Structures are given as structure tokens and as C-alpha cells.
Length: 450
Image 1 (cartoon, helix red, strand yellow):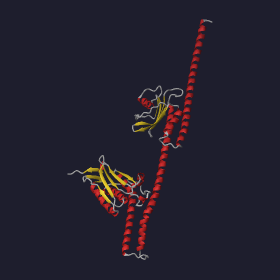
Image 2 (spheres, one colour):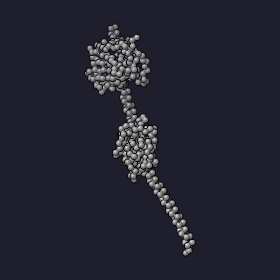
Image 3 (cartoon, helix red, strand yellow):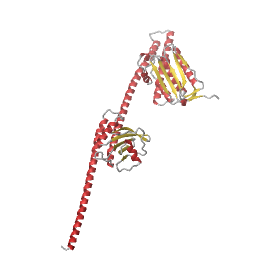
Image 4 (cartoon, helix red, strand yellow):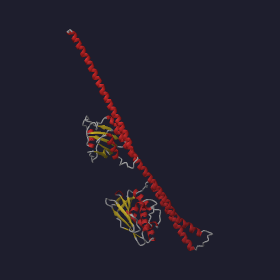
């Protein structure tokens, strides 16, 4: 074969070799793309299975007895088990920072200080290729793990973060496709938490409705009892004095019966006024007409009004001396009503020959306290909250024997709170009761002498 023919054959072989090399490279590239697509499909299928499994397992928590604050830890345990990560934490927004509500994982150190994330992203992840930037540094510092997956729900202010120590076949690198996984897990947690909160609110509403129903029943029972006695007196004595009655009362008896009817009518009027007053105060915040008044005159006038009833019960009222320069910014009618209710209760429950004290003092911080103290039957400390509820009659005979609809203390409490103050009751059985009205510094001043 001549040299020319040989060169032509070699050139042809080289061209064929180059062609097959290109074909081989193209086939290898297609094979790599196919493998990558298969791997991507496998990862997506795995994520979908993981999310589906997580949802199934997580919603079992909704059927349990856990409270909203208790579902965080078991939820994170499910996430770590299904997502194959080293650590996880749930966070909630607190003002301009975050705080960790729940966290689990081997070696996870939960920061005790607030976590500042100026512009929290809805989704973020880090890998070995992620540049060191402020956001990546802030998020990786939460779990003290270099590789993290983050999701944030802005409407509820809740966030979920997962972390890994390394990237390997088990702890694979996080990627953009993991957004479905972490956002799905966070959404399930928020959904279950809100459901639990709704259940708690529903149970609370049911309990409140039951208490309201019981209170209405007690009110009707109390009202029936309180109405029956005076109405029986009015009907009975009126029948005895009616024309054609088989009774023939003397003029002295007629006068006595008339007084009893009048007393019963006054009692009914007082009872109706108390019910209407409390109903009004319960519906709306009392509209006060405050003005600066001398404390000594307000207390002296209230004591003078209560003196008539106290004398009839042979109970004395002793008020401490009050600085004439002390002034209170109060509604004169409503605040006198408070003191009158407290004094009325103290006198009613005090034995004959005892003394009811009215003590006015300047409180620490600039406020003023007015205490009404008696030495009557008293009550157990655990009964005090009930005594501040309307239409409540304590069970022991020493209290029930005095009657009344049980509106004095609730009305006084509502009016004191409308003044920005507080009503504190202290009592012990057999030792009496102290009712203290505390007014804030803003309603107290000392009058300057010109």
C-alpha cells in the first residue's frame, strides 16, 4: 500500500474514532442526566412520603389530651425521625426577636437569650457551598449546627429550623426542594396548635356557660327566697287590715302592721335597686364623674348615713382621723356607694356591742387605702372569691342567717376598679373581715394652703 493510501486510511480511522468518542461522551452525559433525574425523582418521592407520613403521625396528636404548649416536643420528635436530621427547634416571634419554645437533638444547645433575626426569610437553607453571610450566620447559630433548613410563617410568627452536623448519605445536603418538607411540617404544627387552642377556648366557653347557668339558678333561688319573706309580710298584714277581714286589729296593731308593711316594701325596693344597679354595672363600664373632694368629709358623711342602721343593731362605727388636706379624685355618688356597701356588710355581720373600724391611710407609692374592719362571723379565705361574685350566699349558717341578695361586694368591686383601684378582702371564720379599698396615686393629692 502506498504511503498516500495509508495516510488516507489513517485519517479516516481518526475521524471515525473522534465520532465514536463524541457519541460515547454524549451517551455518558445522557446517562448522568438520567441518573440525576432518577435521583431527583427519588428524593422528591421520598420527601412526599416523608411529608405524608409526618402528617399522618402528627394529626394523631390532635386527638390526644395534650395542651397547645405540650405538642411541640412530640412534634419535633416526629420531624427528626422522619426527616433524618440531627436537631430541630420551634421558635415564636416575641416583638422584634425570636425565642425558642421547644428544641431537641443530640448536642443541641438552646440559647437562653432572645434571638435577633432582623429580616426573617420564609424559607432558607445552608450547604457546604453557602457563602458566609449574616443571615446564614444568624440561623446556624440557633442550633449550633452548620447545615440548617428554615421555614417561617409570618401570620402566626412561628418558625421551624432543622439542622445537621454534616452532609453524607444519611444526612444528605439540604436543597430547594426541601421547602415542601419543612413548610409542610411547620403548617401541620401550627394547624394542630391552633386546633388545640380552639378546643381549650371551647372548653373554657362551655365551662363559663355552665357557671353562668348555675349562677342564674342560684340567683333565681336566692331571689325567690329574698322576695318570699317580705311579700308574705305585705300580703299577710294587708289581709289582716283589709275591710271584711275576720281580724279586728286595734289601732296600735294597725300602726305596727303598717310599719312592718313599710319595712318590707323598703326592703323590696332596696333589693330591686341592687339588682338593677349590678345589671347596669355588669353590662358597661361605669361612667364616672370624678371631682376632687376632701377625704375626711366623704368618709364622715358616709359614716353618718350608716350610723342609723348601726345604732339599731347596737354596733358602733369608729373612723380614724383623716388629714383635712387629703383630697381624692372620685365620683362622689359612686365612691360613697362603695363605702356604704362595705359599711353595711360590716354592720350587718357584727354582733351587738362590737365596733366597726374605718381606717384611712396613705399607701406606699402615693396612693390611699380605706379599710372597713369588723369582728363579725368572718369567712374562710377560700370563700372570698365566691363572696365577690353576684348572688352568692356562703353555705354556713352564720352568714346565711343575715339574708340579702349578695350584691354589695360585687358592686363595690366593680366601682373601685372603675376608679382604677383595687378591692382586697381578708377574713377568717370567727375573727371578722377587713375590706380595703386602694386608690392609685393619680387619684390622690394634698391640698396646698394659699
